[in-house]
Length: 205
Ligand SMILES: O=C(O)CCC(=O)C(=O)O
Ligand SMILES: [Fe+2]
Image 1 (cartoon, rainbow, N blue to C red):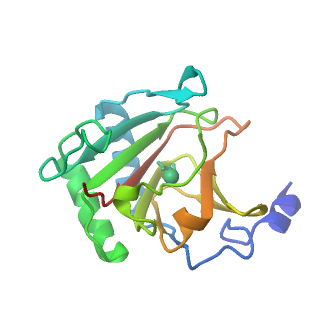
Image 2: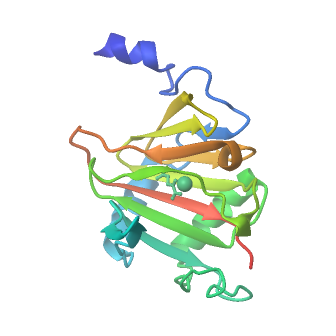
């Protein structure tokens, strides 16, 4: 088993050849204790909801819980087809202030995803919301169970890489990641605990 893993992943849990022009990974960005506290707080305190999405002619529940926070002024969320974000909490403001210097931009919203266990997931997609432009910088913090973040080229699905997003890690998505690649968190057949992911984004009307 260990040998099998070593042939697939470089020592840091990344597949070889991971394109570093679109992904920047920092393990241990948040201290272990702080990460534990945040995970527990978010699970308990965030008003999570499970969204219905249209799949062809059916409506299905997304296989994860979400919550959206952000600035409330200056953006016509209705026009963007979005609901009003929740107001920033002190914890989320603090995390935003930690990731902004690394990302080199300021963010005005954060999407939280709660993967309750290994069966929760997010399907292949890219986050090319026109409001963020085609080359957005997104800062992604991970708390809890380690999950595989897979990316594949839109024009060649065989070109595929994985990176394990660890408790307290920061992943910066940038460059062509949203325009030329798709990403997902696949379901896992392993028994996994909860994971929370925060993606800090800059959107404008
Ligand atoms: O959970 C993750 O690491 C990724 C989440 C994601 O891709 C998204 O919310 O757009
Ligand atoms: Fe995404």
